Length: 241
Image 1 (cartoon, rainbow, N blue to C red):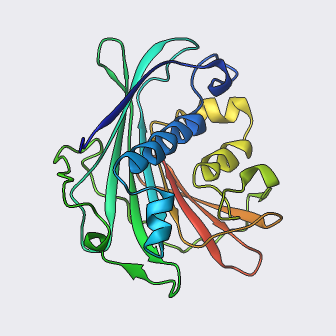
Image 2 (spheres, rainbow, N blue to C red):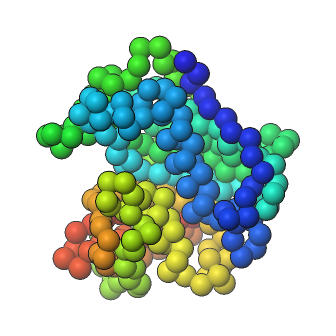
């Protein structure tokens, strides 16, 4: 049972944006795509989880962007699971160029939820016996602590679209990145010069929901954001540097 999975590809134009390079949110889409594929190979995919009355929920995503590859540039996309904790499991990702340079690195934190009770389940209840995870970490630093306290008024709003919805009928994890970047113009995104981005998913949202975005600057020159419903319910927290 192979603890890593690698896909070699030429960067498709459909994943690239206005500057001819891989879009930041598209990079996250690629990470989640290969995660799903590897989960199937490890007998941890949707059908196996459903047979055990459970499903995966992504709790956090963190990505380091070094250099986005150009259209048709040859790259390798690799993923592997870390050793799991009692109730959570991290999965790591690396996108490398033809010389082995890391273009982007990421990690996601997952929990297993029981279909009937809605409660989290121990990870060892579902992990296959033959899986020996790697100790290597693509993003060795811990996930951020983001305070859910924003005093100012909302700076932007985003309406969840039908194209944002996944098989569970709520907003797809990668679409939180797409929604965020859609709030800003090209010049504003370029001025951000995003190198690290993290999203922490707090509650699901659905087609037609209106997300209100709040912003707080951080001492290190970055910013934190909150996406919430009109009633104040927090949907996601962001950190951007």
